[in-house]
Length: 120
Image (cartoon, helix red, strand yellow):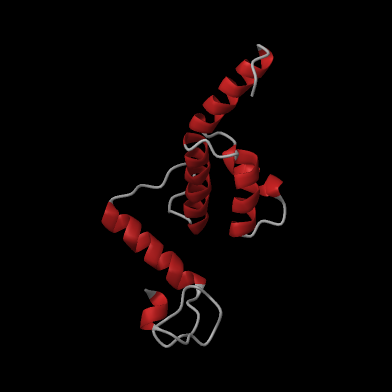
């Protein structure tokens, strides 16, 4: 949709203004806060406002949960996901999983099967 409205932006950024120039971070944060307020979304954790990083974290976690649900090889998929979001090391992507109850439950179940000698 963006490319149809603005076929030749003057920069390589994804978020651009109507004149094709890059949107600055303050404008993106303002848009995020406004949208979240309109949707009635409340920030979680220790932060008073939503952060762009929170959207990225949610995307990675939900994609990984979909991989498990669809029976996709998660180790391979996370490597591709890590590359897609621009992490230099896949361990940076795995960090997103810490403290996520749904992913921890899957890990616990897999470990239990492993400990009992069941095939993986």
